[in-house]
Image (cartoon, rainbow, N blue to C red; front, side, top):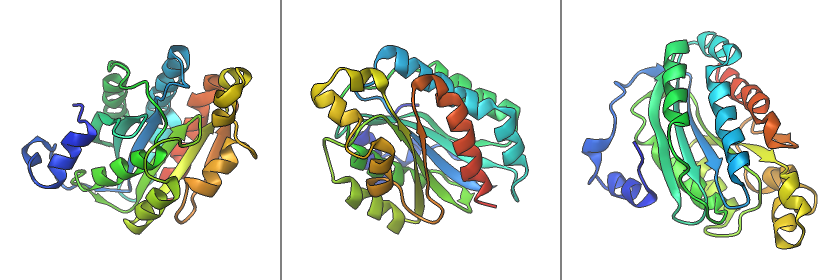
Length: 242
């Protein structure tokens, strides 16, 4: 089910409660919002690699093994796509993942959905949206994680540091996957600065995006390695909730 930022706001004030999926209040080791950048610096080929990488990570044997090793043997996942201010939507709503069948169902829902946006880059707005989702999860989570992937600096919406600090205040840990978009950087001009700021995008994420106990950034040099990087990232996030 897709819900826009406006629909989420209605839910938050009690007008959309009937649409919220009931997961039954299961105990899970972590509730993780996967927040994927689909701004216009990411072309269709790169978007496809990113989507496939997420799906491959979710169904990987390594991730399932990590989930099963946790105290509750379960996590809750939600997948969000975001771009500019006001451009955030749920692509796959909260689901509890305990086993390969759960993971495959989540991945199938993800890969069958069309791209949501092609706008600017509002990381702060994406963080605010992700924080709001935890109130809808209906799980008893030991840990709340916002997992942000992106290929550029924020250029619209709320300041990233403010949104990051608000997320930490809400009890979430924010981790990042910083993608060096070689194609975009090679085009020069504003796009090169946006995707490869002074010090590099991974350092920008360290300074502005991530936070909370054990927060970390995984840097990658191209979209082709996204899946392997996401497996490492997700397993580290889930294992740290033990």
